[in-house]
Length: 315
Image (cartoon, rainbow, N blue to C red):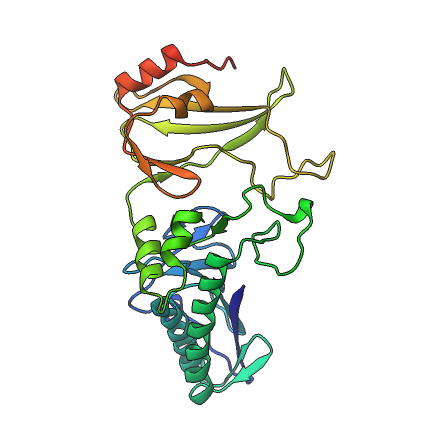
């Protein structure tokens, strides 16, 4: 579910679109690897734009340095009203700078004035309705798109009833608690505050590294945590939907989930242990979302205690 706007410069004498015109004076940017945002970096042909004052879903911008012909903007829905304004304001800046251009949203050609105002308003209504729908309906396909009717077992995510929102900084998982808070919203204020609160925190969002052990041929997934660093970790890690076993064509099966513990005090890796042992021994934590926990920080002493009591991993 998304809104796409394509702006194409017309005429024989075209001028390049500067990066500053796209970003304006409010937006920040970064490059996404599909999960995490690397701030202040532009990809080869695209980047993610977001407003640091209300961090939400972010919207993608397909653009390259010296672009003369076309720019494509894509905003995932649901979002909130202010981000929708950021999205349409960006499109307006580009179209105003190029002047002689065609503006197309999905399959409709828009005028810069009347149609733009109407589409912006309609987008906010559509977004709010979508938010309420995903908070009251529980059927999703394997890509976490909401579907209607019957869903076969293979296409239903393992976290049925939950929905993963891919956002500017990192994903957030909506479960029963989050859905109850956001359901039947009359405006997007709560959603805006929720998305910003979850992404504006100064924390490391954990992401596993996957590899095959050269000796055992077992498939491993390894996390890493740094001493005294606020971090977001999954309670029960799962394989991402896109990690497919080339031999079977099905989702990769992880044999061993593990975590490496790094000490900044000693500037060295202390060791590795089974991920389940690590999660089971955590003390200073709080709820983050349906699938993840916020770790306020693990001290050197706690790391040493964990490694001593937990199951170590021999490499």
